[in-house]
Image: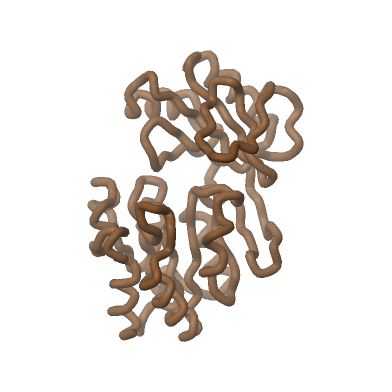
Length: 261
């Protein structure tokens, strides 16, 4: 039997280098959805980066964003659940990170958008982020904390951040120069397990696709996993199968074979 649920990362996996869903991939996603198989997007993207992607989510309408912190119902246009970092944990953690990495830009991702310090270079155009004191009272738990520093090697940034974070939160990464921090235990894999549990779907009936280290737990949990040919070496080693690169419509190619489309 083919998998009962498809879970896929977006950037570097489902979408091309241009950040878009190709016509071929859109066609395959629609065909899989017509079979009654949910395709769940599982991404590090914040909600504000998902506008062009939601039309492809399918009838089930659920998406996992911010590395698992947010479960979103695109059809209803509402956050179903958020598991964020509480200020009691986040404020002292931010202070420790600022002391250890004085040239790092620090940011907080909320459902409403990005709040950052002056050192954090926001590369979004247009930039709707707010700038201010991150240690001031938080309006709500933060979906993610961001640590950005291009002044030191990425491996050093990840190592220092992980040491400072310790067991207080869960750090991961998907691009050089940036570490993303979630609440303890919050990962793509954790959230996917929760979603599948609510649907009565076992890991053995899930196929997952990814390309970077923040996908590892999801790929290791799924009964069938595909690393993209353009993926990080750790992902290539962890997955059970290899898919063509994202710019070759790799996910669509594999799904066409799995579901005989």
